[in-house]
Amino acid sequence: MNISRTSYPRIVIIGGGFAGVALARKLSKLEVQVVLLDKNNYHNFQPLLYQVSTGGLEPDSIAYPIRKILKDYKNFHFRLAEVLEIEPEKKNVITNIGDLKFDYLVVASGSETNYFGNASIEAHSMAMKTIPQSLNLRSLILENFEEALLTADLNERNALMNFVIVGAGPTGVELAGALAEIKKGILPKDYPDLDTRLAQIHLIQSGDRILKEMSEVASAKAEDFLEELGVNVWKNLRVTGYDGKTVTTNTDVSFETETMVWAAGVKGAGIKGLNSEDLCTRNQRIRVNKFNQLPGYTYIFAIGDIAQMETVEHPKGYPMMAQPAIQQGKQLGDNIKLLLEQQPMVPFAYKDKGAMATIGRNKAVVDLPDYKFQGVFAWFVWMFVHLFFLIGFRNRMVVFVNWVYNYIRFDREARLIIRPYKKKFKVDNN
Image (cartoon, rainbow, N blue to C red; front, side, top):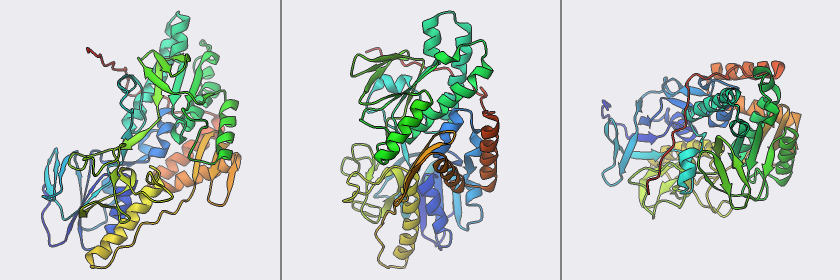
């Protein structure tokens, strides 16, 4: 990897997400050598991926080069690499560009889509966890309407204009709201010779309410907002399969659609060598203690989505969201300083700053520790918070200008098919 050994302890961080970047920033003032590994050379602001998928933003406005984030930090190295395996006892990381020895290892590899072992859904549905996946979804949505213009088959046209979103967490709710606004304000202008009123947006939730991690008040109001926009909200309905044409459920209800978006679950992005049953949970998160250390390893840590720190308040670990990741990254930076000074580390204590989701123009729900509100003010709060946590002044300005323009003109300029996408069907020969 062409990284020289120094007298400083080498700390290897796997992953440039919220947790990894927060930790790297904290370590910048210590006399340590920091090596950050990621398969992308940018930090991705995942909460706004749905806006890339729906043409509201271009991907470069929610991504920021990792090297630029940490360019002024001494003894910092970044390598574009995919981690293949970890050898804990040898203190070695195996990547596609070579091996790397470490003194301390921090796994911040994040999460990935969880299909719960359903092969048909994995093969034919669309995910939205990365920028390439979001661009694929954007292209598919636009291509569907182009194809709908060309077909005389009414059933095929309806399937092309029907969208099924599985999972009514923040990602699913925000995507459904954005698609509803496209249907209402943009499609009639772009496709005047197509009856876009026939387009249907279905949001399916297996539980009895949407946004189940938020308050019941927020959940009910979000459902009201979605129904106002014309979204069909289905609760207590579980999707069992999708063959690329038909979505089947645990009842006699089915949906004919060319596009199903799977937003129903995530799991830890595990790495070989740390994926044994004694270290990992069923959803591939790595068990850690109150200092984010792995059981049996004082020199290996896990933070963010990949880490499962079980407490009385959170028996299944902290939510796989940005705030726990950022807080764990910062806390671990402080603890590594204490560790190097041979001082006792401080247990991690999560400060719940609340949750929020936007459903569309002037529509959002916000749950803060002491206040809960919905509507226009919540929408402005949502925008301010997301602008604040974006990395880079340019990105904040670009996103802000896009939002103002979209609000005034009721338009989405990024509805471009830059990279055409065709669904690849996997054939099961068994």
